[in-house]
Image 1: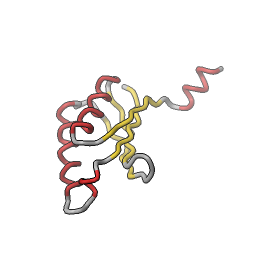
Image 2: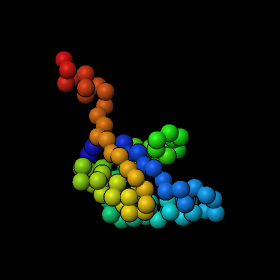
Image 3: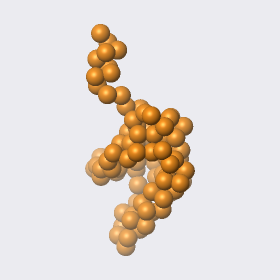
Length: 95
């Protein structure tokens, strides 16, 4: 199981109100739950910069993390995915 950070840019039509963002989010979450049953979501945050959403989750492997990014892209988003390791692991690697 690895930890991943996923940054997403939402398509403008989802942020114009009328519940479109909630509907799209519910659909994406359902697809992720079905396609990647082993995922453990830590947090989803709205961020206001180059990206709109920052998600941190554990997935069984990099292919599973890529599948999640693909599902978000299928919904019209743009994504960037990073592998994350605990800082203590970095310290051990550099000792």
